[in-house]
Image (cartoon, rainbow, N blue to C red; front, side, top):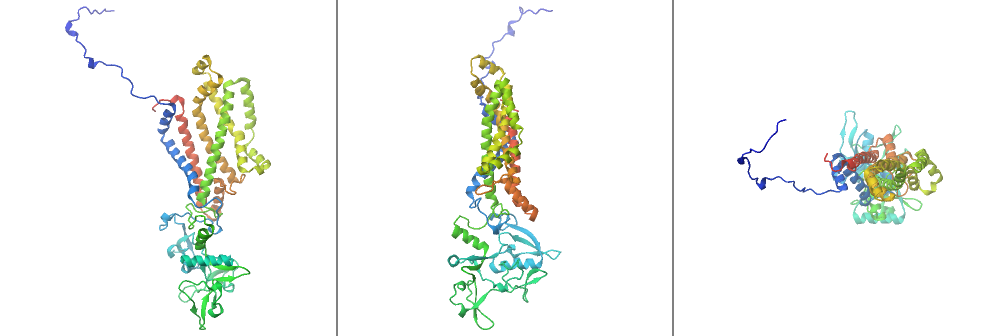
Length: 522
């Protein structure tokens, strides 16, 4: 091997180094970050999980805020506004979200709806506009808020007087001339229909209007001679600007606005205007006019309020049960996984016995023996009785994984007690998996609660309670019978968004809390 010598190196080969060119190790400018900060940074890099978290926050805010912002309550219902379509005041002058639906009907049905708007100005046919199809049908947008038109309703003398005072004060007409029983439709199904204020006939078992030479309906209002009814209080209220009319016999006639019953008055009122009067003057519940953002269901309940209240109950119930399950399951699984041996065997046999009992049987037995306790208590016990077992198994697995790690052995060598090793050294490393499991348990519980109420096993729609599952079932019936979509669309969409968002959110938490990824930039 050739040997190199350095004895004959010329002096000119040597030169003093410039201190400014010397390379030194530089101090890091970065600051250390905590475990949670690093987990949050990794979570934010998962765009799908971030979007899912935003959707979950929006759903939670929807459940919390909406019940306080709407004048309607869960107990509210109205038999005359069943299956009313969604309506927003912002879109009232458009063909979208205006509470209307497209209808195609024959001439008789069209005249019936058109005449309602002619009398009261509340158009069941939107803007009284229509077109004729190639099949000879009338095509128009039917206003679900005005299609009820007028109804017959009985009032006490005091209530009748209050309604008259309201009309005189506001100038809004609520009461319309009544129709004598003899002039009402002969068909028993239409005899109580207050929208037939005109002469009718029965054609092939169906009530139709009798038209004059110009094709207009002929009013059949009940009327009396002025001299015979000058002091009758039920004739005192007249159509604005009309003090009577001359009959063919030359007498002065007035319309009759009430039919006297035993101790009450039967009035013919426009229900839309009466609804406003009832809620603003009698109930004083803050409702100014009927307007349902999500529409109503077949029980006449406001779908927006019921959905928000049902969602709020689902969130509170699932989070509460998940917290209890995590608390009990974490302690049980930690003891079982850390000590192992006979203690682990005994504790696992107990969980095997409990987990072997089907959940549906647990719910059924509790409902049978604890029916007086209420549905919420039954649901809580059912979910808690076996719900902690999965959390206990996950915790046990994590403690088996970490209890023989070097840092645990070092802590034990230094004299740390078992309790400190379990909760200070092992549990924080298992926290990520437990949080992820808990995040995935919440939508599972909500789905189970919705399923039980949908099937009718648990009734959560009594009193001030509402359930998403009951809303879906009610909407399904309306969809199957009358093809009404909105009743099932909104609660189902809520459930779909909830399940998808929580699953994506749980995946993001799993990666964020994974200790092996701490400090990674991937």
